[in-house]
Image (cartoon, rainbow, N blue to C red; front, side):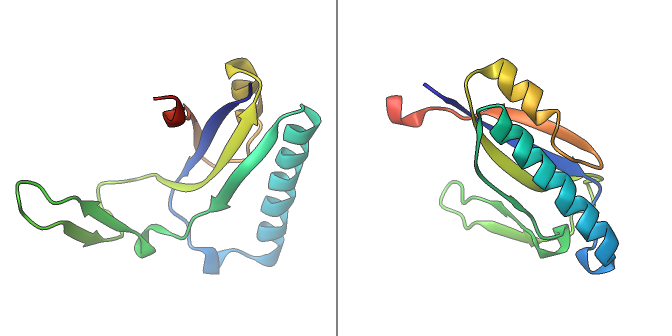
Length: 121
């Protein structure tokens, strides 16, 4: 049975409108190479996306004790790095997840999280 992992791409915030065509093309080629490496390893990308910059995000503190939720528009001054994208991988085991996640392009760092099988609970 395949295991699922999320690879979070954590980097300094960036402005997509300030990226040149050449920079964007190079980034897309790097992500395509990552996708090909995943496929060649017999694993699969189950999903993934680049995320909009922090200025478009909303932080939500859920309602507690009968109160109302609290919404805060980004950017968030307390963060120097943000999640700029993610991939969901289907792999054979944790070792393969680590090996493939390390190939993911990032100008910062990566976090690898196993997905909990909630359908088995």
